[in-house]
Image 1 (cartoon, one colour):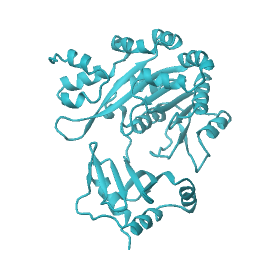
Image 2: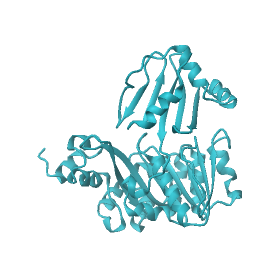
Image 3: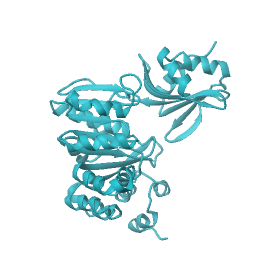
Image 4: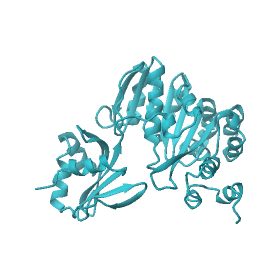
Amino acid sequence: MAPDIREFLLKLAKSDASDLHLCAGSPPCLRTFGKIAPMPDTAPIDFRDNEEMIFRLLTEEQRSRLLGDRELDFSIGFPDVGRFRGNIHKQRGSWAVAFRKIPLKIPSLTELGLPDIARSLALKESGLVLVTGPTGSGKSMTLAAMIEVINSTRPCHIITIEDPIEFLFKNNKAIIKQREIGTDTENYETALRHIFRQDPDVVMIGELRERETIAMAITAASTGRLVLGTLHTMDAAASIDRLVESFPNEQQVLMRSQIAGCLEGIISQQLVTRMDGSGRVLSPEIMVSTPSIRNLIRGGKTFQILTDMETGKRFGMQSMNQALQALVQSDLIRLEDVLRHTRFPDLLMQKLGVPQ
């Protein structure tokens, strides 16, 4: 008989690990503070047991989608165990699954390690706010914390479009509707095409990936809605370039102008291992759309944004190097770990006074 997957998920929930990997022929593996290792006291999973264990989790509709696409994003929760985001995929002819632990309590922006300007961005009445970073950098959690700020302060209508739904929100001052790709709507483009007739004040988009999704997000942000979204980009300049370059060359001048007009700010974040090994700490780059930055975006000079961020402390801005420097000087992270998280290691070493 196949193992009960809830036993593995319970171990994930009770541990410091963030992710669980299940794959036929291998023991269950946990990712803890960024590093993967086999789960203690477990044996390799048999091919048939692995398939039975995975398919037991799914609804008929999910099984049908998985067999058709050979990929499936989903979320699942068990009482007294926890809530998890999962991705099932094929490898070497067998199924594998990766689970990400979802905290039952949404941390505040302060608890996440974000400065006050993050709250100010969440409280914008309209415009586009981006949260960016590599996979596993906590983007979804930051978005959830921003939604909770809005939910606790603003009587409004929030619509989230997610793939899959991760954090579950409860109405407070706001009404929140959560729509899941594949279950509640076909895809991001379809959901956004109809969203203007749903009377939203705030729209959260799980990922700005396709050109059509980006275009409709910009339209919504330019017509009185607050739009929150994520990108898999490492910094503010790269995020803006990604938006612009998703359009054909002949449209890029117009798109730079539209983005300059609606973009309110970008939080680009990374997680860095703590010096004492007890976990990871957030290192956020913050860009706020000042008149100067809007002009740089319009003029296609995003390479100059870094200078504005490093001299824009009074606006709440900071570069990734400045965030990393502060963490090193506070003895929270090691210098050798920092150098893996910066695009400009020589400049950071110079700021820290380290001989090169």
